[in-house]
Length: 161
Image: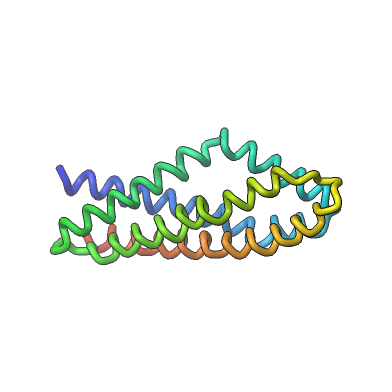
């Protein structure tokens, strides 16, 4: 029974982290660059719109569910250390939770909140937007790498079982 639960969580985590890695990759590679090429008020409005819509989309259950699954998997790996793939499961869970979830909550979300509070036509908008583009994208790169590495480790663990 526990083997089936762990396997199911691994599949969900591999798929979930892969989907989020792809989303983050798109933002890192071209979406944020495109936003940086448009006028500041339009860029701020577009990003604020995304940040509002994403909260009511299938992203949120996937974001929260995959984070919880990765955390549970890390705990399972500690208690089933002798099982094949446990090191990959523990590493994948830890990397995902810290590099994706904690990074998002501690770094990207506060930047989103700061952007939402700025007047797009105000005097400080250009400075806030420039800093946002630089800092948010940097932390998004971290989320992209963490999600991708976690996905690979979860797939490795599936193959090891």
